[in-house]
Length: 138
Image (cartoon, rainbow, N blue to C red; front, side, top):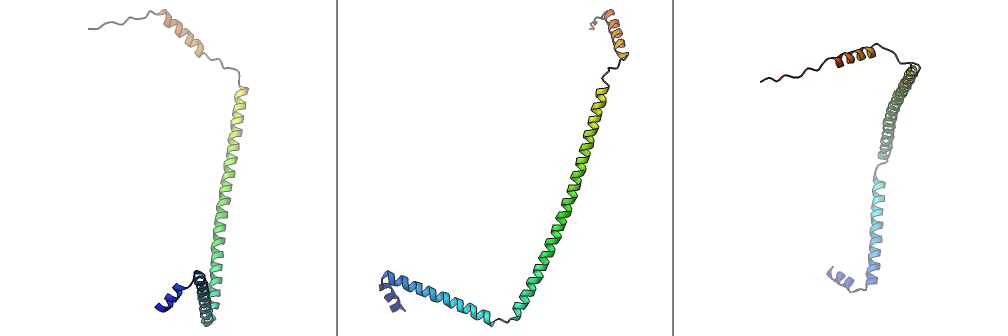
């Protein structure tokens, strides 16, 4: 083996590259042949079992997906209904506010009360009374 390595070291770089490429190709072909050999020796029943398992997995995935999609769809529809209810309530509140504003605008006449005359007479009474001076206490 040492003699063979010494011969390789003594060769030129071009020869070393060609030898490396050849060895890589041979190794790749060897791996492919082993792979084909293993596949040919495995029983065909495992392929059938594998196909059945894949079909079951696909059906399970489709079932999960359809269940999830229907749940999301139901939640979306419920939120849509809630949003529509909120819109209806907002419109009702706006209509109530507009009708309230309209009713205030029609009642623009100020109401006269006797409170103003009572306040005027009270102020006059207070202005006529002398202010009492505070007494000093020792």
